[in-house]
Image (cartoon, rainbow, N blue to C red; front, top):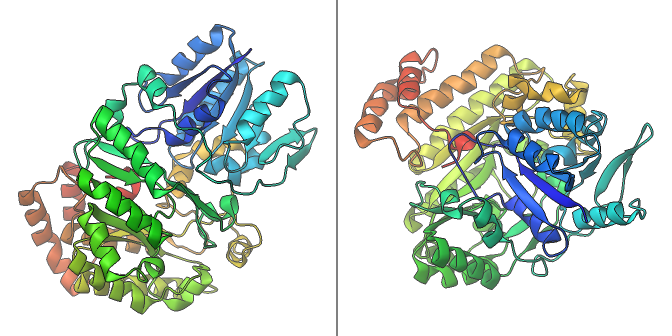
Length: 499
C-alpha cells in the first residue's frame, strides 16, 4: 500500500503553530494509510526532506495545504520541482487558494487534483479510489482536469464536526516537538492554535470563506473543544489559545458553555467574531467570557459607512453607529476589540473612492476616541472570486483580473495582494494607496499594537510623542521619522505577522 506525504508550506518567519489544516487530513487517513508531515515552518530545507521521502519509492501521494500569500512561495516551485523529478507522484492541493483558483492550478500541469473545501471525507475517498482503481468522478468536493475540461464535482453538505477523528497530536510530536509549536505571544508563554469550527453563516462578498462554505457553519461542542485544549495543556504546557475559526462566537450558548469550562484553567484566549452577533450577547455572557480569559476579539468592522457595508454584502444588522457603540461597550468588560477595516472599495469615479478612504480615516479616529484600546487593522480591498456576487462583477468590469499562469502568483506584488496590502486594482491610484499606508503608519505610531510584546514602554512612549502631533492635526504625508523607528524596532503588524 502506497504512503502519503503531507506538506504544510511556510507561512511566517519565526512563528510556529500546530499545522491544524494538514493535521486534519492526516487524521482522515490515520490507521488506514501510513503518512508523514513535512512542515515548511520547521524544516530549513523542506524540499530536500520531501525528496528524501519520495526517493524511497514508498510515497505515491503528496498533499499540499495552500493559503493565498506566503505559502505560495514554497508551494508553486516545490510542486513543480517534485513533479519533474518524480512524475508518477500524484499531487493533491487543498486549502483556500486552490479552492478559489482551481483552473490556473490544474492547468499548470503539475497538480493532479484539487480538494474543493473540506477534505476530511474527500481526500481519503480519493486515495481509496486511486489505490483501488475505482471511479472518483462521484466523490464530492474534488476538482480535476479531464482532457481540456475542468471537472468540478458537487459540494458535500457541511458535516458535523463531532464525528471527525481526533487530530493525531502524538504522532506529530514524534516528527516535530509540539512544544515548539506553542509560541510566546501577547496571550501567553505557550500559545496553542486551535480550530473549533468551520465556515461562517454569512455571505460577505469580500470574504474567501463564502465561496468555500456557502454560508454554512458547523462546530465542535464546547465540551469537545475543552477536552482537546485540556489535553494539550496538561501534556505540553499550553497556557493560551488562538482560535483560528472563521467565526468562533456564532453561538452565545456554546461560547458561554466553553467559558465556564475553561475558566478554572486560567488560560488567555483570542478569537474572531461579528460585531452584530456579539452585540446581542448579554452583559452576563460578556463578563463571563472576560473572566474566563478572553483578552482580545477580532471583529470585521470593514466600514463605518452603511452604504459600503451594503456594497460588501456584510449581511446581518451591523451599522456604523453600532461599530462605535460596541467598541465603547466592551470597555467595561476589559476585552480589547480588534477592528479590521477595508479601504478602497470600487466606485464609479476616483473622487468617490478617495472620499470613502477619507471617511474611514475619520471614522477610525472616532472609534479610537470612544475606546483608545481598540486595535485597528487596515486592509486595502482585494477582490475575492465569489461566484455571482455583484461586487466581483463590478471589479471585473473595472478591468481587474487574476494571473492566468500559476507561477505569476509567486511575484511579490501578488503575494502582497493576498495579504491585502497591495491591491493591484485599477480604481486605486498610487496616491490613494500612499494615503492609506501613511495614515496606518501614523495611527500605529500613536497607538502601537498591544500584541507587539517586544516593544518596550519607553519605545511606545517615544514613538507616540513623535506621531501624536501628526495625528492631531491630520497630517499624514511622508511620515518617514515614524517609519524609521518602526523599521529599527521591527514593529509587528498583527494582520501580517499575527501575535
